[in-house]
Image (cartoon, rainbow, N blue to C red; front, top):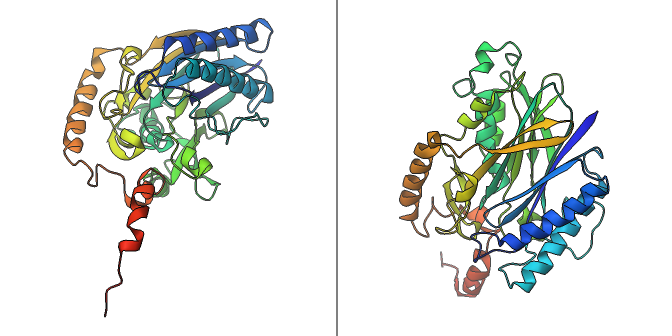
Length: 365
């Protein structure tokens, strides 16, 4: 039996400010998904949040891009938005860029990562959920997991992984994709994905075509044409038995990458791996952070989650992320803490600069 794992998220109201989520919203979401499960639409589900983002983790047999599943998520977000408005939460319905559902939530604001798979005898999967950052935040992480032998020893010593992996890379400005194989095309891959706001790793596959990982690639600013909030991406990674081991997948987060996000989505900061209970983004709306929910799939049932960053082994990574945050914050409104000029075009800065346009005078030769 083929099973589809769908992770659909949205920011539908912050408590307090953008720092966290009111528990009532999770209650509403649980009620909606419980009803869908009782009607046979879902096999299983898990509702959680990271920072102020609501996360719907669902299993079903409808396949990817199912209108029924996406409409369920959309209606759930609408119901949660109504509750957020009643509680006067901040930015209620922020990620919902339309008033009506059009068959698929892609392009409508919510972030989506889905994979349809044939379950192996044992099927460990990890769902990573980030807040206060953008989809390109996964680029370095996915490179480390699937292409860096210093991170993933199995690339060298495991014959099931020794042939490497295939990366699907999305050009978010041109809406094009390219497929690159590692290790053969590693340098070509790095030439692209080092530009984390332009080229995004959309998915990773084994050379035989089996899906290994998939990420959300929604960029709200490009859809809305203005800054409406950061994208806060999700990522699904399969582990073990031909894929990197759970420990190799998690090892990629021990050296926090510098990612765009933080306050108003306008600053670079370290991606801090945290347990569920540390997912509130308070300091300067950050630092950007990520949680990891581990599951075993059993005939579509979600056995879990294990809170995989709830481990003192990641204390050093969190300490390092705080140190980097201290250093970058000293830069204030200057680059490289503030994003580069091109990226700032999609933030709130252009409306501030507009009032200065008429004051610039051409220099005489």
